[in-house]
Amino acid sequence: MLKKTITFLKEVRLEMGKVNWPTKDELFASTWVVLLFSVIVALGVWVFDLFFSRVLRIILG
Image 1: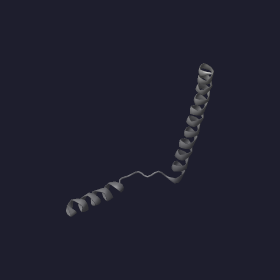
Image 2: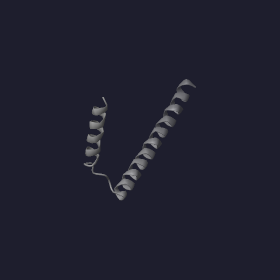
Image 3: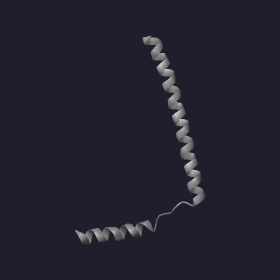
Image 4: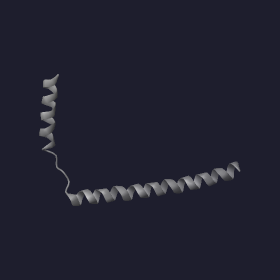
């Protein structure tokens, strides 16, 4: 079991060396895209929730 674990960890280290890590600028750009998209989706959900809650309030009202 210990031998398999050591082999696994060596292979993980080898594969991590092959990873193409993003630059700092790429990371910041991607972060802003994700944050902006999250805010847009949240606003969309809020608008739909507001609309449907008012419609239900009128129907059940």
